[in-house]
Amino acid sequence: MPIEIPDVVVDRLPLYYRLLSRLDAEGRAVVSSQELGEELGVTPAQIRKDLSYFGRFGKQGRGYSVSRLQEELKAILGLDGRWKVIVIGIGRLGRAIASYPGFEGQGFDVIALYDAAPNLIGTEIEGQRVRDVTALEDDLKKTAVDIGVVAVPGEFAQDVVDTLVDAGVNAILNYTPNRVQTPPGVEVRHINPVLFLQSMTYHLRQRRSS
Amino acid sequence: MPIEIPDVVVDRLPLYYRLLSRLDAEGRAVVSSQELGEELGVTPAQIRKDLSYFGRFGKQGRGYSVSRLQEELKAILGLDGRWKVIVIGIGRLGRAIASYPGFEGQGFDVIALYDAAPNLIGTEIEGQRVRDVTALEDDLKKTAVDIGVVAVPGEFAQDVVDTLVDAGVNAILNYTPNRVQTPPGVEVRHINPVLFLQSMTYHLRQRRSS
Image (cartoon, rainbow over all chains, first blue to last red; front, side):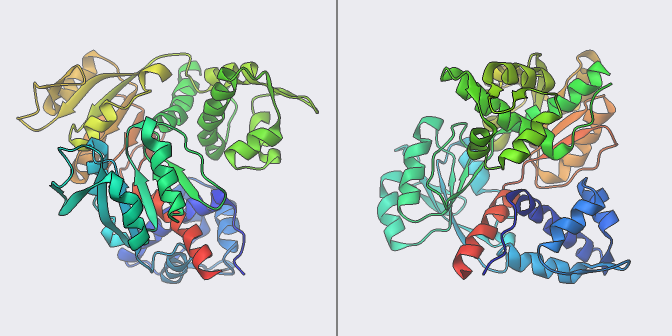
């Protein structure tokens, strides 16, 4: 039975994994919760608590084994497998996403691109022929897809997400400014630059007023 | 003296603000921590704790005033002001960012675009003439900028960030896959789609194995 890990902790795991991969590449064998905390901007106590969800990796006073923790996180995050990704909406943003370096190396295979624009359909982008978005539903019946990346204009976001979810796609990365509704059990992440800017202006404001 | 609010809480504030704006637009006067929690996927106890950093907004058993909480968050997040944003790197991603709907309405003014490509410099994009990135340092001496959005190829990220930070830009939104180093006091947010995908594959893996 899987352990129930809080979402805020799950969202930090990729950061741990990335940091551990870097330390591993640098030849480091052991790392302390202190150092992990400094690198990630959280307290050592929080690090120990986060990692305790996965059992006892660290030995009191001796730190964590970099390679062992990295391997465990890799398995927990499902990064020892490969995941089929499609991108819907091949405007500027969609193309930028489709050509993002680092997907493949992390187990994410972009297997198809979709758009609604006649001048794009059938053209080749990043080595893939752009498919007509009207074929999406049928395509999903033939080939199971793990993750749908949605980069269509906001007003089409919900329709596309509905098609994906109805066809059994359980993970959606939504790049549109629009919120989308999904049934329970579907994972949605929303990349909205405004939210990132707002979390920084808090700090800028503190500085201005101090 | 500003209150010290944990970063994880600060990062949730824009989500609260967006939700409250929606509720306000729908004509809602009061909202409970229960409902806020359901909408945002955190526990009501966490909601009450988060909001307690800003004083007593809620009355026991009566919920929060939507408009009052929204106004307070707006001030806390600095969204009652305007912020000068520049975008460096006007490739596909940079253009998509520069044309993102919703910046202006949230107080973010994209005041300049920069690139290094001779065929882009001087062209007009989103109503702005693209400037030569070699002019960045001088431009920043003349016009203070609040936030730099970096969408250059990864290998140039650190150089651009150094130029921004040296010129007093204290907030960086980094869209490159590369990590950047900044001195203490500079806010950096990193938008890396791989990290979002990885936080979803955790859940997909749990489902596959259950």
